[in-house]
Length: 130
Image 1: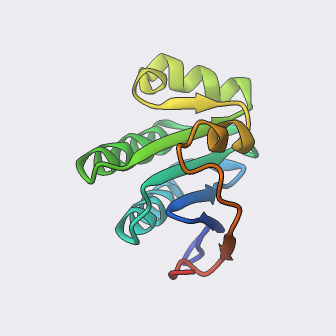
Image 2: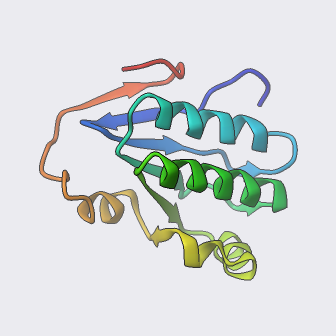
Image 3: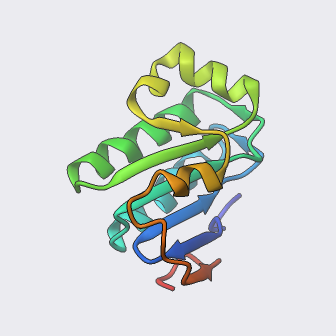
């Protein structure tokens, strides 16, 4: 996905980034850049929504791990939403599932947030601040 950005749903300072069906060497850098951009915009909680993602290679895992390290450094919380067994398996094999909290749905990941009571939301599809 060259030059494109992934949709972001902002709920206060929680950002849900909807990631693509496949994350691999061709788009992992864009995934990482978009996740880092959301952190740079002040997200306290970053939810990477991989619920549509059915394939994630080592470049994708690296993008997620690097984003997690940045989130940690900025004292933000990063969570993953993963439904595909193949993606769950690669995260388990690489140990990423021990770094990041993984949820079966966006609703479950939001429910774990201390700020989950606020329902004010904006959608940002161009990568800018909403």
